[in-house]
Image (cartoon, rainbow, N blue to C red):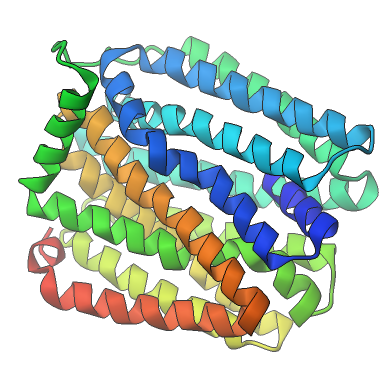
Length: 372
């Protein structure tokens, strides 16, 4: 709901794909900058408390944006600044959250837990735009931001009730040395390094296209905010299907091969969406692309988690987070800049082709990942 209303607000204020890309960039770049430090903190401190503080910061930002919009004084720099603050909170909350999941389930249930987490996240992506689209159309962005702020209360209440295992790290070496230990662990594990590169490619070329759905809704299909909401819902439904697929394949071998296949499918779907001039066909591509994206994300995440020791989990997942989330701002900013010059269909079609080509190269050179 927040993403839907915020993207539409930025586009309404600026009429610029560049600003949409900049907003996505500022929301994600703190994760690229600060996640490794957040990972060290997650290996040393109570992960639940870190998450609660992260949620409180994000809730405050939602309240601030709702207030600015209510009084009609919101400007694009307000939105951009708040996006950066939210991204900073997520840079600490993300590693803590990902490191906490394995402390709540048995190792053999980890892939199912990650898949179920993806499903609930994407159910929210379906419900959020459905409620958000109606709320945005009937009542405006203020209500979307306000309802999002209230939703954090449920998350905080839930976090206060869970009892994860404490971090296993007992060393007291300096923060920079702890970061180096995490980097050496990944450097010495070629499979882990390959998986992290795979995550970066997935978000660099495969996620940023969601940022520019308002451009397609208005410039390509000429249908407005209702079409934008519908596209988000359809993509979310596809993502739920992708999450179910990941859960269903938890006991199947060669998960690396499935992840690479999903990445190729994602690139093909992005290309198909970009060249579609028919709204119905574009929605089919969005559905399939959402399924492929979450399938690849769930499979890669579970492989990274199963290759990691608990004492290293916060740092390893923070580096994974840097790659996974770091590709988003770079891809969004670069694509937004190019879209204003060349057009959204052309840029996203090129992204889809490039993703397929790079996936093919990865397929032919990363034999160990194919065998996982």
